[in-house]
Length: 291
Image 1 (cartoon, helix red, strand yellow):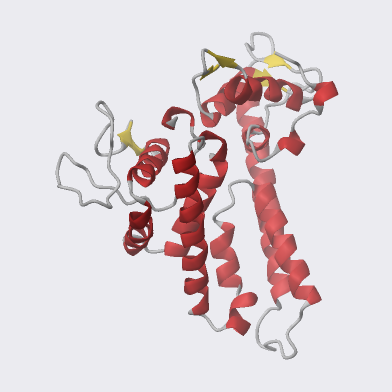
Image 2 (tube, helix red, strand yellow; image 1 turned 180 degrees about the vertical axis):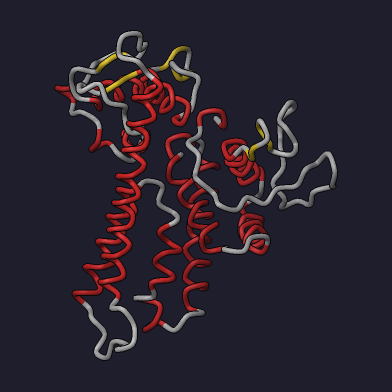
């Protein structure tokens, strides 16, 4: 199960290297022979391995240990709110993998504890200032992986403010809705710059005459959906048809295909289409390539 998980982009990831220290019962460590105990892959922290080991630890605990485990992990990080949001996202992204009754019970309890813990953290801030606290909004913004998700979240926060404006807003501060608009504009500009730089880099690196990338003459989501089926739906002897994760498939598609105009594909767009939670981004039944 742990080989096929979709990772959640944790910013902080406390672990114990069992080669140099003895872990306690709530520490996250490697659990299989051959896994690097320091969680490093080519000199970089392996977030995919961390997510696998975190889920493994969660499912090896008893139900009564889940609450102290989550509290213990929060005590190890500087931003516990961000960490529990990432844990919630990790569970949500991989729900379809939790097939046993015991796994489902434990994930339900973990989600309940996360919600109660988050409410407790939020209660520490006065309710009136918390609702439209832009620092808190920016903290929550980090839990969204793509620019599209971040912008949608900001639009929702902006609309809620405009519908429920405080009676006496701070006259010395930039209004909350204007801060949201500034942040949206920044994200859009950064996304546009990244896309333009990627296109320029690809144009310099790949010569049209000898490019090995194949051009997709139709909708990109039809191709991506075929890979999605092989990753999540098409089975061989009970195993996924492709033994890879969504990040690896994303890189493969981006590195091997171009859109109908001969331009590089957006990695964020492809990754979104591969998410089990983004069925609306994939083609309807009559547009699928059935495998």
